[in-house]
Length: 402
Figure 1 (cartoon, rainbow, N blue to C red):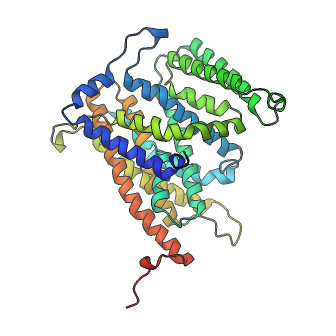
Figure 2: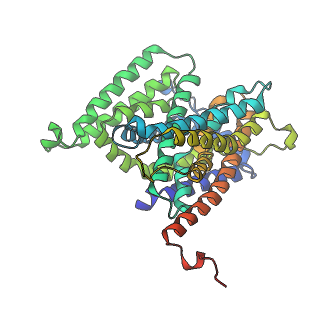
C-alpha cells in the first residue's frame, strides 16, 4: 500500500473522484443518483437520521479529521510547531490565508444575504496541496514542504474551530458531557499501547485494546452527533487525546484507506451537482465570492502575511534556511486549493438552500482547479530554478548553447 500513502497519488485520487462525480451528475442518470444520495433513511436507529451523503460527510470524514488531529498533535509536540519561533511564520501566513479570503468573499457578496459562506474559501486541502508539490516540485527544498505542511495543518485547525463554533446548532450539553467522558476513556485506554506501558511489556494481546478503542471512538462520534456539534469534530477530539506513539501507528494504518476510499468517496458525493442551466449573470454572488476568494484571496493573504512574517522573524546570522519571497508565493498558490474541507463548509454554510450549495460546490471545484493549474506552473518554474542552482538539471532541461 506504499503508493497509496504517496501524496501525489492521494491528490490524483481526489481529482479523479471529484471530476467523475461532476460528470456523472450531469448525465442522464445524474438526477436519480443525486436524489438517492440525499434520501434520508428513516431507520430510527439510535436517533440517527442521515442520508447516504451525510453518512459520508458526517461519518467517514470523521476518520480524515482524526488523522489530521494526530498529525497536528505530532507537529505541536515534536514537529515544526513545537515552539513559538517555529510556529510564528506559518501561523501568521495561515492567519493571512484565512482573513483575506474571508474578506474578499464578504466584499463580493455584500448585501446579498449570503455572508454565511465566508468560511468556505478559508480552507486548504493538505492532501491536494502536498500532492501538487510532490508531482511538480522535484528539487524543492524540504524546508518549503515543511512550511506548507505547517501552514496547511494550522489552516485545518482554524477550519475545525470554525466548524465547531459556527456550525453548531442547539447544543445539547448532556451529550457533550457523554462525548467528553468517552473521549477521555479513549485517550486513557490508548496509553496501554505505548511502547513501555505495563500492558505491552507484559506481552499481552493488543486486539482487546483495539476493540475497546474502536467502541469508544464510535461512542464519542455518536454522542457528538447527538450534541448538535458537527460529528467530524469527534475525530479531531479523538486524534488529540490519543497517545502520540500509538497515534502515529494508527495514522500509518488508516492513511491508505483515507487516501484511497474516504476522501475520494467524499469528493465524488460532494461533486454530485447538476451544472445550473443559467447565464453567468444569474449565478449567485456566493459563486463568484468563492471562485475569486479561493485562488486570489489565498494568494494575496498568505503572500502578504508570510512576507511580513519573514521580515520580523529572527534567524541566526548567516543562515540561509529562511524562505524567500518566491517560495512564499509558491506556497500561497498551493494554499488556494480548498477542495475537501471547503466542500464540507459549503454544504454546512448553505444547508438550507440547495441551489446555493450546488453553486458553492461548483465554485470550490473551479476555484481549486484554477489554483491547481496556477500552482503547477509556479511550482514547476521554482523547482527548475532550484535544480539549476544545484546543478542537477536534466540535459533536456538545459538551455541550448547554439
